[in-house]
Figure (tube, rainbow, N blue to C red):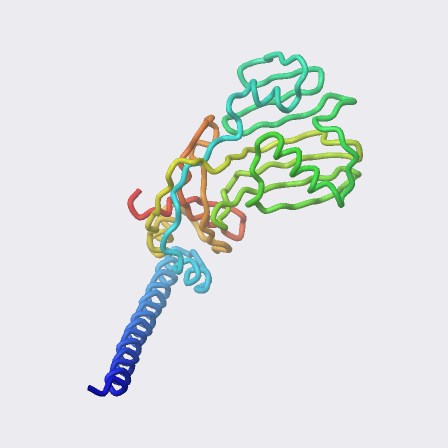
Length: 273
């Protein structure tokens, strides 16, 4: 048997098989793109009948997202009193169920949201601070309090000698809407600190199939009254029942749809919700 010839035939056969698979994949992708493009045209036209305008590119880009994680997160606040003690220290007293104070400052709560302010002449964290080292000091301070800020969007601003450092939570490169913390500081230390924060839990996450963006926009249309122009469509996470305290919570994906008046609607993105 001529093994060299057999080998050549096998190689040619494998090449033909791979070419056939590649052709099939390309055909399916072209068909899928045509289907999405047709769906987009139909959706944009439907919205227009209700005086809602949206750029086709926004819809097409959103249609590319098929799945997202549903995952558990743990509140950085284990309980109000312990969290207050970690921030202001000293002899903690309870003003009411949602407020604690000491000679160093006070901390107030609303659900998962907190606001900590130092008393006059005191600091939540004393350190020489400039705009150039403010982020590093903020990260160090938050790390000591148990905040995992590695995956977050970070911003620094300065006005009237007050530096603000903000951290906006992100998971899997998606924003966690309405979740972040801001620290305010002067040249001598951190003077106030507010927001809400969650760290990713060790509990198992799952993959959620997402609704088609056309279905999401129809839901949006049914929630709106009057004309509007959609300026942004963004996939992310949202904590339910914002005014309720959650020690641990399941984050589920949502679509955040914003119009040119900065009015926002959040719609559950899961296919089976």
